[in-house]
Length: 42
Image (cartoon, rainbow, N blue to C red; front, side):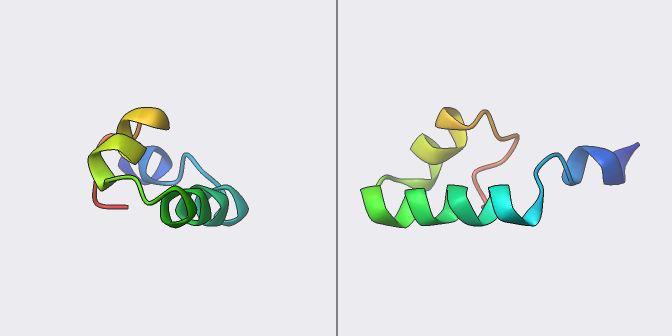
């Protein structure tokens, strides 16, 4: 169950989130809120 929660996003989706995060220059917290992530650790 825990592993499934951790892998909500595929690698491709995770990369696109990270790319968006760095392109926009937004904070980790803002990115976490935008994508409804549990933690802002990215």
